[in-house]
Image 1 (cartoon, one colour):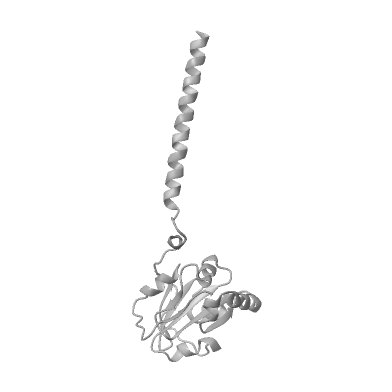
Image 2: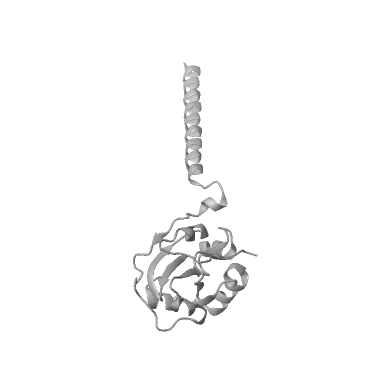
Length: 190
């Protein structure tokens, strides 16, 4: 009898281990299905509206690198932050070349200190190749348009904020509603 009990306990232990291994592989398969296959799939190419943005807002004083947006029929402002991992990926060109669907476009780099913003611009030729400005602490953007999220894109019409979106890859900028380009501007990461 003791040998039969031992065989039964051993068989039960093997069965429990087999079920545990099958469950482990099933969980790994489920987790694996949630991880994108390639780097470019890792970031969504959709635009999500920024609900708190102050639409219709306009500014009296534009930073020097952004002043041309005030008078443009259609203008884009891409907002990146030195503290944002997605922004770093976008600025480095990891999600593709930054192609602006309108000739009146610029990049605003939100940064905690001027030195951090300057280093971000210097380290990312794709940012440096476009008109750009630094926004220390994001104060200008928050004060004028109530936008405190990055990466984001703001769409202007004659200096007034018409829409604002978050995005995760430069591909999303191709889908901006109501932006018509006479000639797109493109810069490749170097």
